[in-house]
Image (tube, rainbow over all chains, first blue to last red; front, side):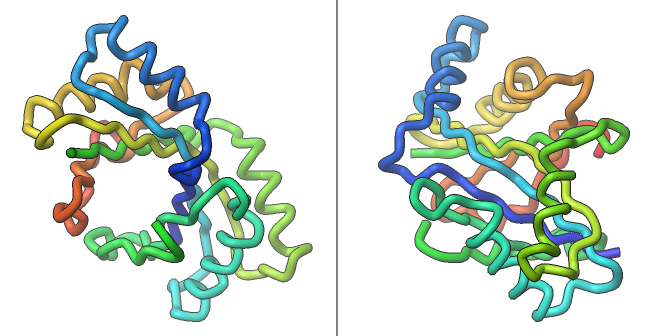
Length: 96
Length: 96
């Protein structure tokens, strides 16, 4: 069984209230090293069988059209994350 | 400036209504290859300077204590994602 991981982050110019809340909470809990936090989404898409280049292309389209809101979010990665392909370098899609 | 990426997913035995909604929507929009979807979270933690092993350890603790709810979520990755370290293999933390 194959798996594609899609990662979506708020665009840099977009305010990220969840990230702001986390970066405010961390120092109160003893984590003082972190100067900024942004929170995004991570999707795992399962497929029967192997992740072919066609499936990856479909996942890329689904990432742009369904899994992200292109007005406020960037798709930062669409990667084959099937068992045994764990070391694959992320394929960055669209502007980072 | 360094960056640590933390990835959190719902535990496999936990119902994931967001993922269920996505997997229901995809075929209606023409994406018929995907048999399952799970939705989790991706955090980018910024640090001044380099990501040292100590910072990575702190990020791991923050991931377990602040960024995830250990009752229903697993921390699936805590990775140095600073510029130029992009090809680093994910360091999986805790049970997958």
